[in-house]
Length: 335
Ligand code: TXA
Ligand code: MG
Image (cartoon, rainbow, N blue to C red):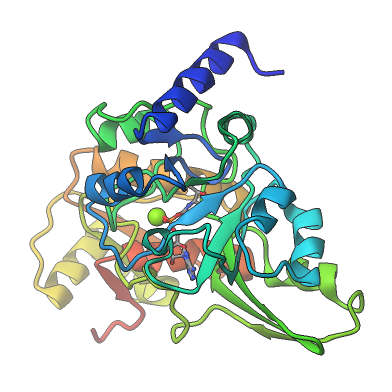
């Protein structure tokens, strides 16, 4: 049971959605900007307020597997197993869409991205609305994603009605997995890394379906539409420097400042260090609020030191975002 004030806000939000408005929605990953999937006019409002290009498709949020099935041409066995294992949760499945999903949502693609969020407010809202909502992250296009309702208020100057569902427990966006399942084989492509890793996905499917499974890892050559190079950017420049270079430059903020200004012909005066927890789950949770705090600190540049222990799929999901958010990524002292 939800607290009565949250229930009241959900009722209000459902009314607004039915009236063609868009709302700020808490999920476990990041806050979304939601509209009814059947309302093209409201969907257009999402693109407008985010200043998002129409070539960047939206994720559709459902409250049940049955609702997900109502959006696709065919619900493959692998989707059943993965939904059973990870829904509600931070895994988005990309599957061939049916005509219920407008091409405005999918940017003209024949596939739709679907997820069932693990947040009581999001689930209850979709249930009460009786239809799925399309929702990208609630930030201006290319900027840092929001992990609290205050972030959404700041981003849109309080213009978007947002339900405060607390701070997001995951903190980075869902893993996006494209499924291409045929009679004898399953081709899986991770389009965006997240806290559901390929190892976890394969463990759920291996040997259960009697089909050959081929997994394509996220890489520089695989780009989801909209997964453009610069993304998640804070309002002041971020520079990521690999540990080796950091040490070659003598460590310590003053040394780094001197070497960086020289090698990039910059004139930064007040750099600030982005510090992340050494546990990746906690680092993911804090990432976007730390980036926002650094941006608001009065500094003119954010420095991030990439450590040796930033390895493995979870860290890769975080480093992927930091690379896209960085104005410069320094992996060699010669640059
Ligand atoms: O955790 C999340 O996924 C959050 C919360 C709000 O659910 N949503 C989110 O949405 O991150 P957004 O719009 O910031 O990122 C969605 C990305 C798009 O940029 C695009 O790369 C990919 O999902 N996408 C959507 N539909 C797709 C499709 N049909 N095929 C391939 N990629 C798709
Ligand atoms: Mg986004």
